[in-house]
Figure (cartoon, helix red, strand yellow):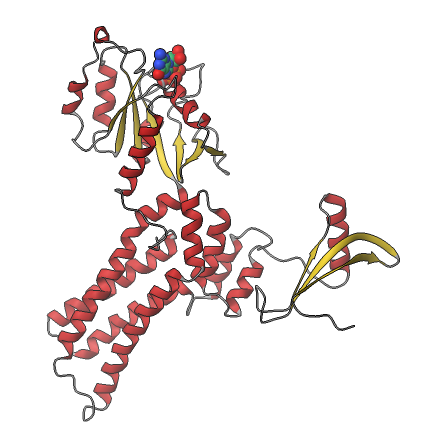
Length: 418
Ligand code: GDP
């Protein structure tokens, strides 16, 4: 009998005469569906056996299991969304924190695509104008054109540059801040880590695919994700002897976005502290003066001695890892520092995808070539080559003229079921 579109039906799933489960079934006829194709969704009771049986029954009757990302890939191939939006679906599913989720959602809604499409439109208009003028000089004049194009080109360069620059923050939003906690033995590194993980607001996640001896913990507080790198076993109570100095710690410090240096203010500054300060001299860092509860005049900790090793902007915060004091200040400082007090996921689109960044970098280069050609007084047909390059590179972001292999590779990273 005739089933109505976009209705939910209630009934039994039957294998011959046997009722397998009591379900609801959703009918969505193309093009008003996720993939633009006809879609039926079955909502059955959970559990392994029921789902297995229903699935088998569907497969027996001619369905095929979807490949990872197949639904989204079809949505892309059928033109419902472009490639950057499809990638945003994956980012959305993977999002580690609220900011990452918002940014992915903006991209899914076309925030990035719109910007790219606008740029492409403007570029192709100028290419077409040059071509027409060269073909038909009687009706189109190129007098004064290079100056006008230069102005446009500079505007495009600024836009491309802004998008490229957003990648630093974008990566931090999406992936988290690669953070290294350093400090001499007993400075309170593990206590601090525990204080962070134990924060009521903290969401702690295991990072999949990383071994225990490289990445230890990922903690999200107030929308900021810290991927805390363990330097030489800060949580390893057996072996606290060499908490710095080992090769690995050095490497971790080098690749970290942020160093948290814990100092024990209940004792004097030691050689080891100085050694660490020197090593992290060029890194983005926050100095945490720990054991504020225990420090007294007599302790002999001279904060002024730090000046020689850190710049004025380096935040220095008093905390007590043991009692949780100062953690709020730390979080506040962290936000200021990483996003320079200006991050607005509601207004801006942040580039989070390395593929997009790469295409933008190439676009930027081509646009710069255009600028140089104009300034060098080259003939107009020279501009079109680089303009065309920029146009094509931008097209890669939204999936215009993208090769099939790349499309397959992008979607293969999706989780099954979407
Ligand atoms: P790590 O070697 O740097 O990991 O240091 P731990 O976190 O193991 O701390 C060393 C010792 O200092 C432990 O006995 C902690 O209880 C103590 N400790 C850590 N932080 C504080 C603090 O803020 N105040 C006080 N009074 N003791 C602390």
